[in-house]
Length: 70
Image: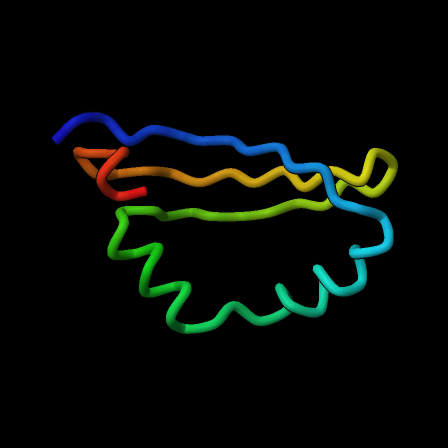
């Protein structure tokens, strides 16, 4: 097995969608968690940076074939 990869994504959030985003992400659906596990994604977190309306997501990928898993 290769070494785990740490991935970071930066996403611009539309200010008018911030409340909806927070409501939808308040509780992660079990199917989403199962999919992340099946795709070898662990330690997933998303942080909202309101001054720039950015979402900063990070996760660890522990699989062997990133393109296939994603």
